[in-house]
Amino acid sequence: MFHSIKMNTIIIFAAALFSCKNDFDLPLYPTYEWPKPLCDTTLKVVWQKIIAPDSIYGMAQFFAINGKNIYWVGSDHGNVESNTDAKLGYFEFDGKEIKESWTLYKDRSNDTKNLIFRNKRKFIVYEGKLIFTAWSDLFCFSENGELLWKNSNFAGENEHGSGGPFISGYGNKVYFPSDGNKITDESYLFEIDIETGKERLLFTEPMKDNLTSHLECPVIYTQNTDTIAAFQSRKWNIETQARRADMVAWNLSKNELLWRVDSLDRYAQSSSNPILFENNKLYYAGAFDIYCLDPFTGKLIWRQSFDD
Image (cartoon, rainbow, N blue to C red):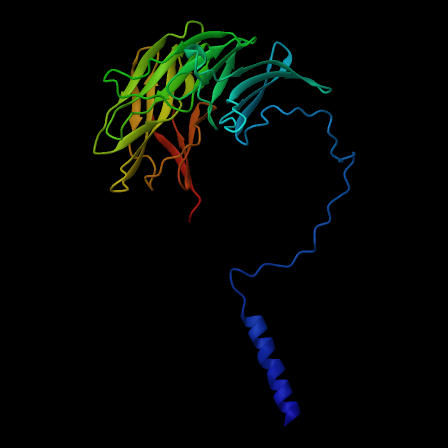
């Protein structure tokens, strides 16, 4: 009897084992053995320089100007106890050393240096000039730390604009979205000449359908002899939680709307990811989808979802 029970148990176990196949069953593969590296991978510190010792937050960017490697950094808060203000830094480096070219501290007694350094602020470089946004102001510095110009004129036609944290560049122009001061205000997109610092209001997004709008930095491309700026208008309502993502293409040469697609994303979710222009196509990442658009008409070419 014991033998019969034992055999029945084995049969039931085997039947259960072979009948439990489902879509989640995967073949067992042997453990992957990583090959040995062909070179020495030991980390060695060649040089190290403490740039912002009094702040745990900051931003940095590597780039090259006239064959020189540059490290541009800004610490955002400073240190209250040591009475150290936030600063910008500009450093040259090679494979052996790094040297400080100049640093600029926030100086509350000098309006030309009244900077607000915060994390994730964007800056761009053009022919040795460094353009930095301090939200409501744009600053342009030379390689030597000289302030070339400052512009605070981003309030827009109805003086609703308050500036913003991001900028983008194309040629000798900077593009700067300016958010409204209040959730009921308009939003604006400005173009700034890097040589002069002069701004031009390109686009105004009004408050519509009780939705607050935030404009993203544009991607720039050309159509025949015209220059086009495509950008996202992210909309939301704090009280109702309503959302919408629109796409706008503005003809910079003719100063007119080329096309507009409202409510692009099927989940009504916007995305802070930049728009990509590649091979005469626009690519946009929404909440769970990637969209491919015709950059000259706004027509949807294809959509790939990632939540099915």
